[in-house]
Structure formats: C-alpha cells, structure tokens
Length: 248
Length: 225
Image (cartoon, rainbow over all chains, first blue to last red; front, top):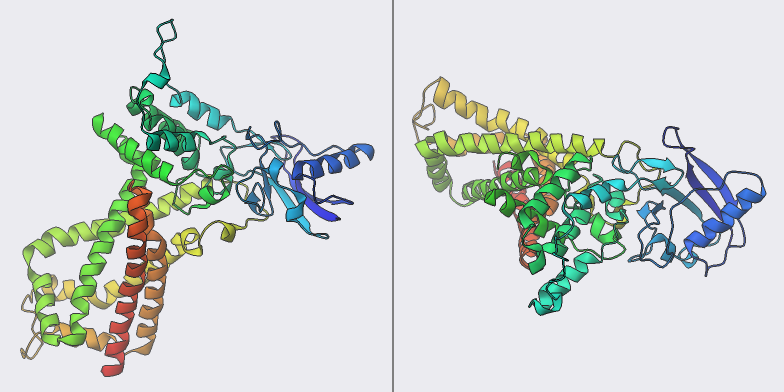
C-alpha cells in the first residue's frame, strides 16, 4: 500500500518542531508499524536526509519503549497493543497517517518522536519498591499465604510496562493510571504493607512535582493502555492515599 | 492531613465530596419543586419551611453556597492546571475513540450550569433574600395577605418563553454534566469498580430523571399559567 505520513520533526529539545509530510510506497500489510517506519528511514538515509528518531527496543510489546501517537491515539487505532505490535493491516492504501510524539509537559520531546519519560522513573524511585532483607535469611515468598484473587489483581497491576500511553491519551496528561498500577501491585500483597503509607504518599508527591495533570476520570487511559490496566487501580490508589494521610 | 487537600488526589476527593453534596441538594430541590405540579399548598408549606427554618437558613444554606463556590472555583483551577500539563497540543487527537463527550467537556457543561445559576439566583434567590432579610418580611405571605407567595412567584417566573427555554437548555447541560459527574465522583472517592457498576446504572437514571423532571416542571407551569 502507498501512504502519506505526517510526522512531527524536531531537531532537539530546544528547537521548535513542525509536521512534515512524507510518502512511502509498497508497504506490506503484514509489516509492523515500526517496520514501516524503518522503510521510511531507509528511504530518508538513501536520499541524504535525517532519519526520523523514534524509541523502540524489544519490538515484542513487552518493554514499553515505543511511544508514538498515531492518528490521534497512543499506539494507534488497535487495542491492547504497543506501536511495535500495531500492524499495517489496520490501515488502507492511500491513507494519511499522522504521527506525533507523546505530548505532556512532564514528557519533554528530545528529538522527533522521542520523549523523555524519566518522570516515571523518578516516581518509581520515590516508592515503587519493597525492602527485602537479602543477607541470607530471606523468607521464601511462596511461604507467604496470598489469596488467588489478590495475587491475580497484583499481577494485573504489575503488567504495566510504563510506556506512558495513559499520560499521552489523557486530556489532562495525568499519570494516575501508571502510579495507581505501581501502588496497587504492592498494596495488594503482604510484602508491600510495611512501606504502604510512605509509598503512596511519596509516589503521589513525586507525580504532582513532575507536572502531570489531574485525573478527571474520562477513562481514556484504560482504553488506550496496551496492557489493559484497569481504572480500579486509580480508585485503589485514592483509597490508599486517604488511608495513608489519616494514619499520618 | 495538612498536605492532603493540596495534593492532586486530595483535590479529587474534595471535588467528589462537593459534587455528592450538590447532587443530594439537587434531589431535595427537585422533591420540593415537583410538589408544585401536584399540590400548590404542599409546595407553599415546604417552601416556607425551607425558607424560614433556622437550621436550613443559617446552617445548610451557607454550606450549600460554600459547596457551590468550591466546586466551581476548584473546577476552574483544575482545568487551568490540566491545560498547563500539555503545552503543545496534538495536531490530531481522536478523543472520541476512548472517552465520552461528556467526560471531555465537563468544563463547558459546568460553565453552562454556572450561567444558569446566575439567572436562577437573580430570579429566585436574590428576591428571596431581599424580601426576608432586607425588607424583613419573614411571613411568606402574598402582598394582600391571602395565602403564601411561593407558588405564585414560581409560576410567574415561567411565563416568559425565553426564560423557560434557557432553563430547559441549562437542564440539558446539567444532565450531560451528571452523566459523567455521578460515576466520576464515586471513582474519585475510591469506590471499587464492583460497587461502581451498580452505582453507574443508578447514576445514569439520576442524570436523566432529575433534569428531565425539572424541565417538566418548567414546561408544566409555562403551559398551565
């Protein structure tokens, strides 16, 4: 298929960017979106132009590195997939595809479609962990009784790959689905109870500090999340945050 | 708890609590107004009680005014902050693919409701305050002293078709606001999805029935005056 691509080009973090039109031809419907971008870049390199910079790593939908906003949706029009798992069969011959970086003040554009998602790392550093004694007398995690329901819910929350689609999709650039998932995966398990109060308070404080917007419960994040992280995680984080503040 | 209401989640709780309070007030307001359709006497009695009982006037009314003001002011502050969180807008943003129109436009439906409240205050609240607290007439009686004035004042307001049209339009916006606002308030309060699913059906019914009821009352008095 032959396509017209409207792509955000930005030299570096300081420069002003703009949308630039490109044509790509003979794109197979079996290609992934990133493979189509590879074809474009090969074309650009051959003609002596600067290739389009974009994030990618595993290309298996696991790492959460790819981050494009395609035709007005994070990771494009397909559901439950990252950009690397989006296939060209979702588009038609002659289509015009708009490709932009994830937009948020807390995710500054570094170059073209690459954004700095370090804010997520700093939120994780603020409390997204448990402290475990590893001096040789570590308790076997399997010896701790955990209900199947809690284990399943914690695992569902832990599938968040931190890609940032929630922030990109939210009209307010809110990070509450991400933070809610990270708070939940520990709040649901006994190992997470010791640091529960500090965790939620510190992670929410860091989230606010990074300049993310406030959640208004549109639910866009849940729909666009490639891992199907539920809004229930935000409700749980809200409960955890209230309980933590009451405890002091 | 000092930093709680300064945090993004604390503000969500505060918005949700003020919304729940306002939704309860709306239900009570509707319950009294609908009496005007079935029994002018009952409407007069209820209005006089609400307008003169000390706890309603000096306790609940200030809380209501605070709740309304807080909800609007905080709504605008949050909208302003949220807009700051995305400096460069998307060239193409397909919001309809992942969220409802109501959820994305709460600020506009809220602004329409604010406009209506200004009209409503000019129509009812300010004259009421003037009669009771400036002129000092707490009797609730008509000028000729023959019965209560409340029903007469209500029906008189709905003679003008432009005002009735404005009220109908405002209640449509109120319905759109409540369509998202009801479930959003429970989500913000941390209510789990299991309980929320049951509340959602109730919320949708509330968001349709209450504004529709107010529209019915306005039209009823307009066509029966």
